[in-house]
Length: 108
Length: 117
Image 1: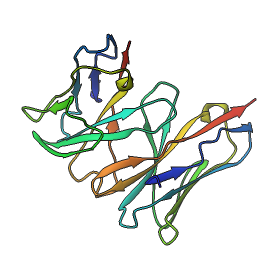
Image 2: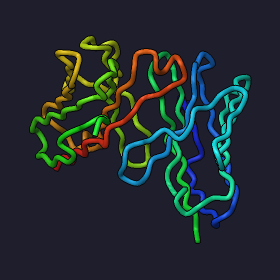
Image 3: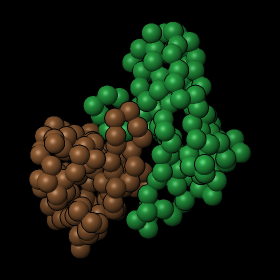
Image 4: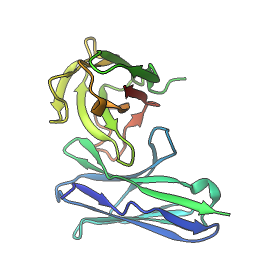
């Protein structure tokens, strides 16, 4: 079993749609959690941290459920520019472990 | 530009040759990480340094791979006797020591693309 698992997609959604990505992690001692965004052939960039209380940044909402070892990302009113791969990332003992990513394409 | 800098950005080499990548981290960051990413996968951890000390190495880092950070600033990743399976993007990242513990994170360079033919 992978340490961080994501649905690879691809998710193809129309502009304005709401889309949700899920992620599970195996290590219950994991300390902190993030979503990164990666454009094609570019480096990953931090999208947002994920907190137990849930957090929102504009159209993006992240949730963490420690009991279920589950992380989610919700994108509302999706834009063409949201097209990218979204990486679920878990801090396990001082190093970041990445999921394989979920590919999103927002269609006009 | 004060971000993480990597070079060369692209390298094509023949199987069996040695290659070396360089990473210059953000100047106030004392942790430096190397990751490898292949198509359709997320970045995979290779190794990291706290200042000049190499604190952890992944089992992915075979004996053909060696990383150094001699003065605690820039780092090099050398691959000896390259194989076609080494073709990937090699990503360097840096952070402050407390970054991960406090919920902050690491910052990546643009990556070095290696193609072994």
